[in-house]
Image (tube, rainbow, N blue to C red):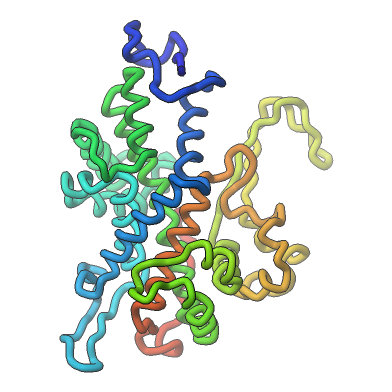
Length: 379
């Protein structure tokens, strides 16, 4: 069992809260043990399969035509023969469906019932979180600080509720184990707020870019509809994930190419000993930051036209996905444990959207240019 160090914050002497409940034969510290919890839930296996089934259920609910409503709907028509349609903001639609579904999948149904404004506060936090990273002065970071405070406050109240069967194994285990060693609710809530952000910050954006490329490429759209059709049940509500991940090369190629063009992961390491790099000698203790985005535009690896969306490059060279130059989720000991559920989530959403609806750009390709990347803010 896990024995926290004697100087652990809020550690008490009673045996009831100095021992975690999870078996820990390697006697890992709490930080590393929590990393194991993420891997147990999010790496391939029964726990991920169960999570995926729950996720798909919520995605299906939110993609019910009659439930497509809210500020992301720009215009709609009454149901009249062939004229029934809704015009949506693709970005906000992806955000609403996937963040809502992910929040319910991981945190259960109680959280959003407790605070109907929780997701709106999350959207504000996600949009302005870069101010925290760049240590903006408080007067100029009121929006992000207010949103963060509201999120933590709701999560603190959430932790007072009795365990609920809709809560994921991961969130239940993280909160239970931290509580068992005496960490206070506000501190656990602060951890959950960060976990909620990590779970939700990137997947909906990836789905948006994926659909944007597909909708701007009619040939690819048609190819993906044909390729993924065998994975969809006759009811349209069930998906054969193994088929999508192993028998749909164009879907996988589109996913990889979108990741290559839009991801901006980085890795940070510490030099443990004097380390020569080129003509420089880095002293021990030097912090090294390796941004991976530059690697994704290396013509010696990905071929010509690296600035363009060319998913076929991944079909021509199936080994690109294993290249050391392709690091959308980092690597090594900090390899993102959520990479499997992110792919599953995006695949499910995109495939259901393409097969359930006749989706097209308002005004056609000529009437709407391809969306640009925000380069003015470090978000």
